[in-house]
Image 1: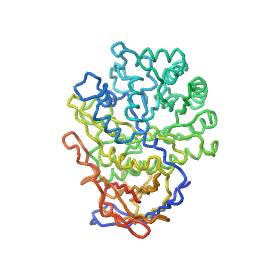
Image 2: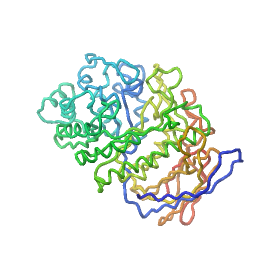
Image 3: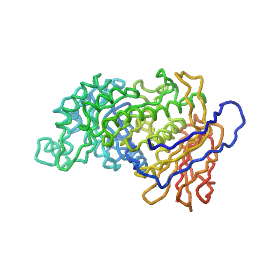
Image 4: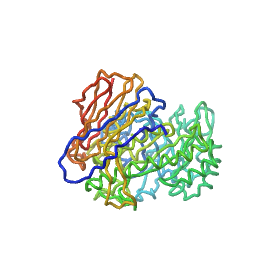
Length: 522
């Protein structure tokens, strides 16, 4: 493994000791970069779930909410600023009950359907293939289509691929033109089913492997388009699923998915998004960082059959999952987003960077109004929108997209987390960090100070670079439970970071307690 991280054997105890400034060190090996951090690691996920689509991304052309052809203007601009590289749709569990032909043609003639997975909501299918793919063009991102394997057919998915990507005189290309789109869309990423072990069909891995082989034959490449075919992979710790697919599907798939959600308890309990104890925060950090061990074990299985790492691992569902906010619709998974969620985002992205030799994509769940979202909108017609702390982390981290990962040694304090629904007592580092070199030669460094009480003076040493300038942004808070809402939209926001000191071979900076910083060193 490329990772070069060492943690000092210092255990910090979360007691009532006075706040202090800890000392940490990060040595960045700026001449040893080898692997690119794929921009798709910063991917998003939009499922037909709650108000993610309707009221979140889409309000329709007749809505009083300012919109462009039905898409909310404020959400469009926010996503453009985020440089969203890829967007996954239509699910999730919804994907395996979605029949694409219901979502094409005149909107007033499209059939309604019941969303059986998420609250029994009646969907009018006004947001379908054209609306989604046109949205991707508007915000400048790649579409990632999740195909229906659970309740669909090979013929259905094959025709959908033809509809979207064929420019020839084919039946589905002709139908697309009749529906108003002359030229095909640029669709690259195709998921063959979703969670086929669960809501996508409750299949055994052996059975799904044979299905994938069949689907992959008939989902063809048209007119210069080359599909990147993604198998429905494992949940969390199901290493056997990955093993069976690697043995039975192998290089017929371009990628395999992995899903991992951060919840507070090993028993699957969740709790409030905004009302939690300090111990709950630290436990959440331990559960969040547990994704690294999961990734490493799945990667080890993949390495046995694919040592050249040609098959990508796609963490296409990840993030926090808390209880639904009181008073919201059951099954719509609307939750608030506090500074704790921002830390889960930062620590997870730092983990993904370290494994970018195998991780091809990641898609946080979800983009608007669902789970750990980037954006919350008022769906009652007022047109209010708020950016979450997680949004600010993603925006701060944009310099990492397509940069070259740089290995680093990190020395910092640690904490043993005790006393909260654990099977074991995880030890978490007080500083999570990552580094990369951009195309123009700058070194970008992320620093997440996990301590709720103590600031950290971090010395960043560089092997080769002699820094001349350093700029940065800081995301901080008064309380780890702080969040943004429609009445207080800027309680948590990124600000310019000052006070970094340039040394002969590096930089020294003080990161406040419970803060995330991103520095660009030139």
